[in-house]
Image 1 (cartoon, rainbow, N blue to C red):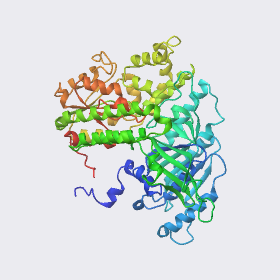
Image 2 (spheres, rainbow, N blue to C red):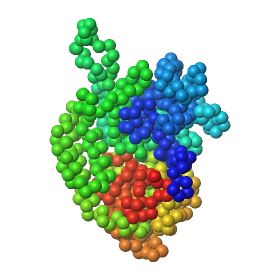
Image 3 (cartoon, one colour):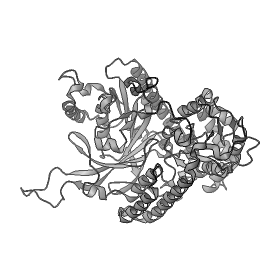
Image 4 (cartoon, rainbow, N blue to C red):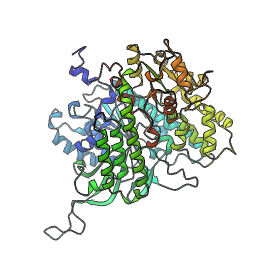
Length: 612
């Protein structure tokens, strides 16, 4: 043991991204790889009656558990914005919780409800009035259960009647989204809190431009109670949360069939509607799902493989999970596993509403897995020869892509159109004017708005947002580690100098560790991504340059950036936004869900000293 790395107190001070809050259900925790992440904002989307409030109440109690049992050894602040708070249900859960965990409390009269603080929030302005007091409450808390969980139930209720669907109101509303999420993220980061927000759904309505059904994350469609739904508050809000979970319910009944009778001749009375939690997107989790029911004692998940539950699992979700697993395979039996995947896919039966897309997705899944396996067999031998590292910036090191999404959504709203991720993926990583041309042409507004006018309008909104840019998870850790090990590092970004200065002004010390920066307005960058100009220029400017491209490792989040790096002959690790369609991810040499998942030793680089 060096530097006391394995001491218990050091393990308890590990990175907040590794700390999780248990849901109180072992099977559900397994689905979420430990529970709800701290130092981030987790959204639970569901229609009324699906159990999102039930889960939040259970989390409020589980936060009091010691860290050794998956809790946070802390109290909870529950902000509720609609309907009377369910005190009776909280007391019911608290009674069961107390009986199950008698050793946590000093005496029999110690009530778990005493450590759940409840505050009504009746408007957005009221929420902003409360937030400064939360900061002080957390910082000055001397309770043996310090505040470790904040629940906002629900965010949609705060915006239901205050704003119209006009461009000016959409802009104001989006700005408030980012202010709310920004403050909650600040609290989560500063005090190592878990933040959970509930959101509602609306019925899906097909728009004339066909963009209303845009895909966000792992699920192509969201269904609940037999109808297609979409999360409330739109794409701008989707960019404000780190993780999104979707809870649905169906008309099927857990237990005996409806027509069955027990010995007394009556139907079973313990029947409950099926509920299902899906991971829509998360920087820490691959796509996954878990079925559960709500009992008197709380949330209780159903083990996979028990009867019809396993048969009801959508094939497309299973394929995505398998593909994500293949991206991480390191054994020599890849081809055998690939053949088993093909056989398994032939035997699976999709749900009715997925039949139209299953065959196409199977082909894409086969192609992507096969492409990755063939590529892996040919490039693995060169992984140990990396000597230099080049980073993209937007969406990889800095969480700035949400700003572009927000303002572009607002601009398209003036033309009664919606901004989707298929369009965003084509724009990411490119020079401003190139991205602008794609925007106006692909969205069909080029006759009404030129690319140049679009940039002017977008600039007026972006310049106020860029100075608030936050670092992406794992960015600081990786940059500081490589710099401390004398690995030459630099940035190659499509951002021009003025925007670069605005985006990095809060992080200048970290970005000063770069050997050099190649920006989008650099004279040597004649063409933007997917052309290799930026990466080739970056490789030439290292102290011992030009560097052999095969010895360079590039980190990218954008499809065009991955292509640019491959066109330069370099190795690429892609950290894609979980909302980008999987078909864009096939070219990268390695795909990880977050910079926190990167293992330098896999590429011949010095390992992290804090890795376990």
